[in-house]
Image (cartoon, rainbow, N blue to C red; front, top):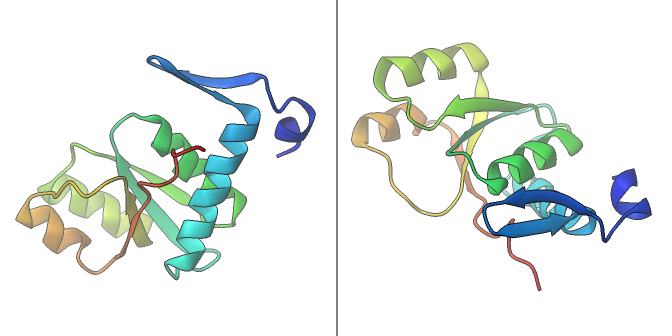
Length: 126
């Protein structure tokens, strides 16, 4: 990211009481991109991002985009037929979620055929 090279110490993002510089944003998106590749998500594969609003969503979205993996934003509150519709029409190969919180069994069945990628390390620094 060019901005990270020229203004590494400038604040790029603020979420609640935490801030990230452009350099930290660059590092977090790079970790997300590497994590997707390491999980076997291929270039061109769609990635369903099913997360609540959080900085990790942005890191995952930017990481997917920078590595040639289109991100599909999926509302974290969707389940059942609503979730099925989104997944059927967006054709994701994988789903990315932070942490290890489990969804209900209906969602587990709907997401079951996807490669699941945990991105809980994308926001950790030093």
